[in-house]
Each structure stands twice: as structure tokens, then as C-alpha cells.
Image 1 (cartoon, rainbow, N blue to C red):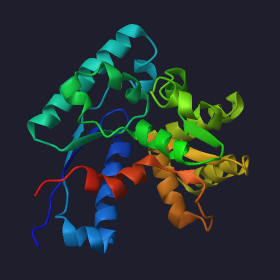
Image 2 (image 1 turned 30 degrees about the horizontal axis):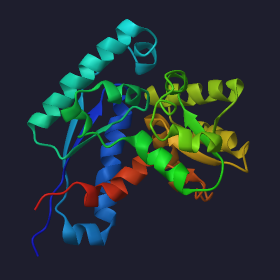
Image 3 (image 1 turned 120 degrees about the horizontal axis):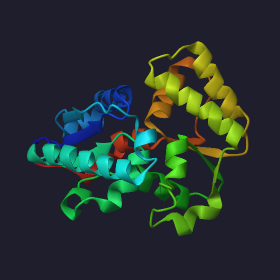
Length: 241
């Protein structure tokens, strides 16, 4: 049987550790699934990480900065398209607020983490709490998505005080300050909402969620992580002989 191949582009730079971690997640998923190894070659992965002098939180704060970030996204996507990638994952939820402003030929290449998250909510009948950076909330990344009207009653954000705690966790991950105390703090934060399910809407929180798999005995069936979802489901959607 001829194996198939996919070429995946990853755009980083807003949080370099997060994009590198996602590349690891993609390869780990492939290596751990025998059915994938039987049907597919190891994926071609193109990680384009142009470190930004300013984090995306600040870049999204004023119109001029949004224009700057959009220009960088277009340039980086164009670079990956030159390598004939089948799809592109942008490892920053805040940057997803700009997807509708990309040129059409670039939009069709994006594997939207936001779309996958909202599709999951739509398929469930429960309440979800969004775990994200303040920048994603302020940019109304979810609210500007076409599916928002169908899922709005099932989605809430954390309170201001808890959001401040989330921002501290995210900053610590960006600074590579991950330790057992940080993981305990993340577990404690989620433990405040025993009746909710969660959406991981931040690449840095994906890192923490991934590390919790080995650190804690807790089952995380109530957590939807679109970064994991991408690595498990991208194969059938984008492929080449």
C-alpha cells in the first residue's frame, strides 16, 4: 500500500515555546498511533517562527498594531505556501481574530483552532468555560466567529480575578518557568469549576495541559484541547498520495 503524506505549516513567534511544543504534539501523535504509521509517512512539518518584539497581547491592543500583525501573518503564510503545505496552524488564539481579514487563498489554508473548539461545543449539551489570555477575550475571537450565535449560551469566561491568575500562568510558560507549583496552580484553578467543561484557548495553556497528563492522576475528559484535536484529526482532512 502506498503511504500518504501531509505537509503541515506552523506559524509561531507570538510564543515560540508554544509552537515548538505543538510540533512535538503532532509528531508524538503520529508515533503513538500504529494506524497512522501504517497509512501515512511521518508528516512534513514547516515551523516558521519569526520572534515578535512585542507579544500578541500588545499587538492586538491598537488598530495600527493589528495592521502590523496582519501584515506579518500574511507574509509568514505566504512563506509556508511557497513550500506547498497542505494546511497551516497558527499557534496563537488571539491572532485568529484576524483570519477573516486574510486574503482568500490564505484563509483556505488555515486549520482554525477556534472553529474546532466551537464545533465541539455545538456537538455537546453542557456548559464550557474558556481558558484563554485576556487578549483573546478582548479581541472577541470567539464572538466574531460565524458559529458564535449557535453556541453563545453554552460558553462563559472566568471572572476577572481568575483571569488575572490565568494571565500569570501564561506569562510563566512564555518565560519557560514551568514547575510543579505552576501545574498545581492550574489544577487548582480548574478545580474551582467542577460543573463546567473547559476549552483550552491558548497555546501556552496547551503546554500546561499536556504536562498535566503525566503529572496528575486526574482524568481530563472534561477538557477540550483543540491543539490535541488537530493532531488527531488533521490526517484525513489534508493528505496527498
